[in-house]
Length: 184
Length: 184
Image (cartoon, rainbow over the protein chains, first blue to last red):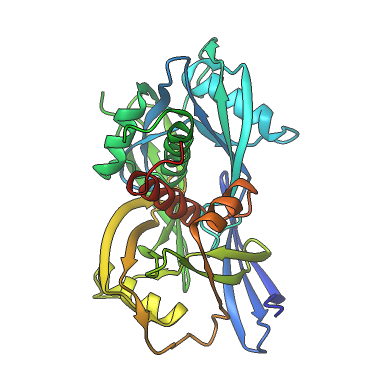
C-alpha cells in the first residue's frame, strides 16, 4: 500500500538561523487534500561519550525553547561539508573538551517526524582523551560525568528530559547488560 | 551557576494548524545577546502498547516532513482539556483500535529542545483489548505487531528512525532483560 503524499503548492514562510518554515498543500494517497507544515532543520549529531571507567559525559545547558536547563549528551548541527563523524569529533571537542579514539554509529532518527525533517545521527565514542575546550560564545555549557548506576537512577526518576539523551542512555544500559554478567 | 536566558523582544512569525513560530531576542547569563527561534507545538503522547504475548503494536505511516514512511508507536497531540492518560487512550483507539487495561507513565521528554517546546509523554500500555478503530480522515495508517526479538533486530539493523519509538523500544528491551532470566 503506497501511502506517499505529494505537494500541490508550497509556501515559504520563514528562513532563519536554525530553522526554515514552509507550508505545503498536499494530496494524500486516498485523494484527500490537506496542509502540512514543515520545519526544515539541518541534520544534527549527538555523541554518547564514555570514558575508560564507563562514565558518560554530559552537558547541562539552558534550553530557551523549553524554559529550563536540561542534562544532555553533547550534540550539534552538521556544518556544510562535514561528515557526521567530523561533526561528532568537533562537537565533542567544543562542548566537553575531548577527542575520541573510536567512534561507532548507533542509530539515525527523526526527532519530530510529524512536523520536522531534523535527523540526529547518534555516535558511541570510546577511548576518549582530553583536548582543548573551544566553545561558541552563545553556548554556556557545564560538563558533568555520571556512572551507569547514576544514569539508570536518573532515568527511573524521570530526570532525563531530552529525547536523544534518553535514547543514548537506554542503548548504553542495554549494551552493558549484554556484556556484564547478570546479577541474578 | 544560573544559565537562564531572558527575552528582550519577541516577534510572532506564524501560527498554523500544528506549529507556531516566534523569534525572540534574548540576553544570556554572560550578557551576550542572541536570537532564539522557537517552534511552539502542543504536548504529545506516545504509547508503547504490549499485548499479552509481549508483542509491541506499531503503526506505519507516511511522514511528509521526512519524505518517507516510518514505523512508529501510536502517538498524537493532546487535545484541549485532555490529560496525558486520556490522550493515550484516545490515540490507542484511533490508531490501532485498542483499549488499555493498564497505563503506566514511563518518561516525558522534549523531542528537539534546541528549537521547539514539544514534549512527549510516553506511556506503557498493557492488558490491551480490541476496541473500535476510529481514524482521522487525514491519517492513513497501517497496524503492525512485532515480538521483542523482531524489535531488537530492527534496532540493530538501524531501521527504527523515529526518536520516540527508539526510546520506547530500548526501554522495553531493558525491562524484559530485568524480568526474564539471562541467557548467560
